[in-house]
Image (cartoon, rainbow, N blue to C red; front, side, top):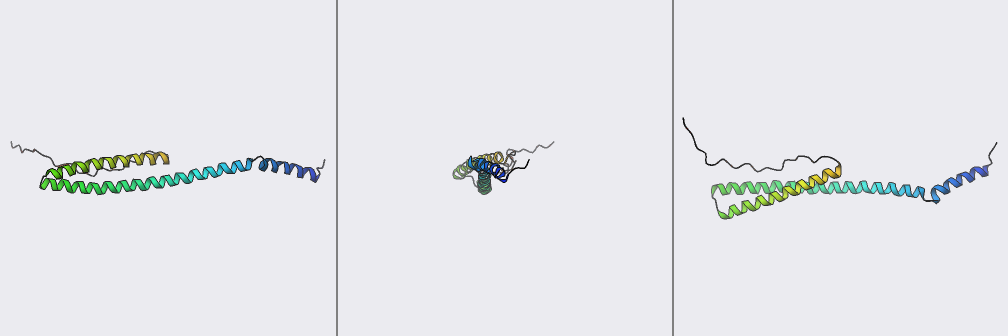
Length: 136
């Protein structure tokens, strides 16, 4: 049983028509393109969050230095203005640290990992006060 070239072409034409004519091929290409777009968007979001996180980290470092200098100045010559400045800097630091932690959590969720434990507390503890020497 030999098939005629016409029946082979009929079958090939039917298959091509089914794939292209009903949009099966185009739908597959559309899904593939959407997947690639999602990957690109994810990469852009990840990069944007990393840049924001780095900016917040730099702000933490800068503000911590200003805070430490203000505390040192206050220990040398206490004034109400310096006391208010220290309180203001401390609250600003707390807000920026919260922002940094939030950004790290979003980044970890986007990358499908656990948030990293990045140290952001650089303020040294205050010196001890009211110390007494006990001699036996």
